[in-house]
Image (cartoon, rainbow, N blue to C red; front, side, top):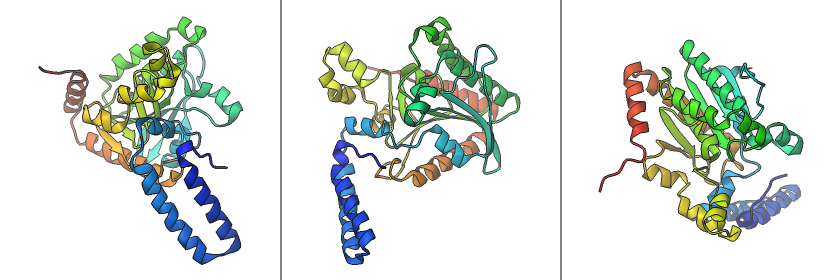
Length: 311
């Protein structure tokens, strides 16, 4: 059953009427309702607030990393474990083919349903998850395989065990190592990109975001608690943080925006799959046309320009 957010309630009413018209085989009413739905979609999604975009990024029906992996990859083979502690189900690593090109796909997986969410730790990786990602990237580099990373996490897991096993070191190690990996690196925020948990698989030649995704140094809830000690100011914090793709692109913090359906990937999954796969295929081809030296130099220039300003 589809989940509707508060600002989508009118869409839900029209959709329920459409389902009724289909059941009664009233073609005339159905055509009229479908026109009404198109108008309401345009009206609702034309002027979304930053907070509403955050809600869409977190939508429970939104495609997760495993959904994209299953759509994109032919002959997928999952890689497990960091060879030190254990396998972290919150972070997935798959080898496979996209349009005949062998790729390594790494993704943070939130999980669906209570049992699966607990198994995946709600998409919050432990340090062994990030170390598994690094192991997979080093394997890809050894065999000259492009890497695709799918970011979707509220943040790295902040539990006691994770801290004891070096959560911050694992994230910092990935940031350091990924800067010099000698294969094409593409990172895409597909939903929620939270803090260091997102950055740990966010260093790449190309960093893109889906239309309704967010990328933030801290969650708006955390920001409102720290700055104002007031949980009611989440919407204000969301706007102040500048976490939407349009804001980040204007500040040159990301390279591209992938345009999923206006109504959102949670309502039109097929279009989101096609758009992401097309972006990955195109980006790999562009990066493969560069020499390794030029690619690494461009990556270095891009990363060192972040935060630069002049007065």
